[in-house]
Amino acid sequence: MLDIHQIRDNTDDLKRALRRMGVGEQEIDSLRTLDQEARELRTEMEKLRAEINSASKELARLTAEQRDTRRAELRAVGDRIKEMEILCGVKEQEIRDRLLVMPNIPDPRVPDGSSENDNVVVRTGGIRRKFTFQPRPHWEVGERLGILDIDRGIKLSGSRFYVLKAAGAALQRALISFMLSMHIDQHGYTEVYPPYVVKRECLVGTGQLPKFADNLYHDAEEDFWLVPTAEVPVTNLHRDEILEAAQLPIKYVAYTPCFRREKMSAGRDVRGIKRGHQFDKVEMVRLCSAADSNNQLEELTANAEAVCAALGLEYRTVLVCTGEKGEFNTLQYDIEMWAPASKGEEGGEWLEVSSCSSFGAYQARRANIRYRPSAGARPEFVHTLNGSGLALPRVMIAILENFQQEDGSIEVPAVLRPFMGGRTHITTS
RNA sequence: GGAGAGAUGGCUGAGUGGUCGAAAGCGGCUGACUGCUAAUCAGUUGUAGCACUAAUUGGUGCUACCCCGGGUUCGAAUCCCGGUCUCUCCGCCA
Image 1: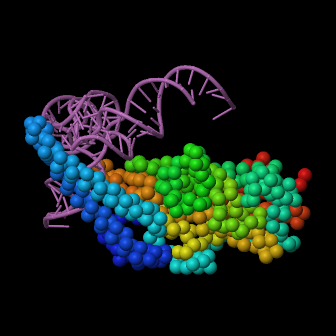
Image 2: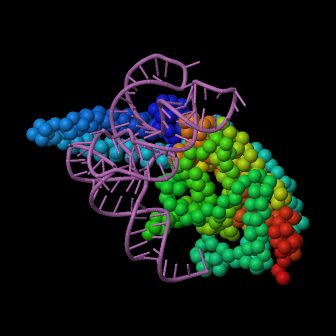
Image 3: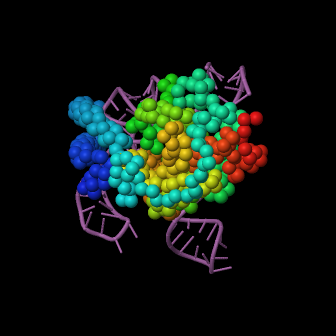
């Protein structure tokens, strides 16, 4: 969330910046008024409380008779404080609630726009594969080979679930192992195995709550929440902590399943395995100092691109526009892989396999993650970043569609073979 | 799941209604002494909010914070209620 001081002291700059994210000026003005009112109340209350405190100290030294009259007066003051406390509490809660859903200030580099057509391609990699036959969509390739079973996924759990079998399950597992190894061994990340179920504070910390509760699976009995991304447990590892400057940057990588209700995308991407309620992802998370976060984002994005390149798949990196990016990040790069048959009859499309974002201090302020710039100095909020490295189903789609052979088999990307017992092809037998 | 014990500042740990933001020790910082280190001695040492002050990274005051949330009281670390977490013992279990 934003710092209330920013709203107080830099109102005009803030208005200008947030207008790009669709926040009206009156929204900020009313927040300012609310803050002003709450502070006046709070100041008044503190004065009254000071009166009681000093009077109470005297009271201890008075005789029994002297106390009685004074007591009655003080009790009346106490009652007034209680009334004000309630009123002030309501206002302060309102401020907090509104700050928690207010978007972050976008980086000046973020392009304005309302749809993916306004995203800017900043890099491309790999080469497009040429087919001597009509490539089939992944659901056909997978079903024919007996490695993908969508019908039985639906039987077990309903729409947007699927089953991977035999070499399909092995391929996904190989991808996970390969990605983790790469980030750990070549990119210097520390692997984390976090809980897949977290408390509500974690989701408030990274921003999913309160605004996006709709997209989360929730166990009401224990108030447990299934993680929609490893970003949530991993970023929250250092919630309410003060880190040493020497520890930064911290680089974590975690493989987890992700659970999402996808209510908002009902009817979209229903074919195949592109969008499910449960999917696997390898996620990178970084915590760093404010001065370092630009570099950290470039590095993190490069780490995700390295996976695409190693697999030998065509990809591109886009700078996401104001209307399409996450509301709470400052800057977002999406990495997309080309899937030649993912739209069935209509042909191919770019699939988002990674989203790499920098959040500035926005999440750190929510989750209270700080660091001490030098010994004895005041703690400051860290900057947080995260990015997929990568999301499994879409990479599976890209592999199934790009590496399919005319005979219906799939060539296993060379870098994955060591993780699949040296296997070079997935065939029906 | 059952029974019991506990939660205090960076750490250990006292404190059972006012003089407690909190003893003592450790640690940290500053200074003195010493050729250096160590030792010793003296001083100092929590966080946040707000107001005032306009002071080249400050100063003064007030408020809040002794796990969290309520309550009693003129006054709560201390008493009462609810919750969370930790530890020990028993049970169960991959």
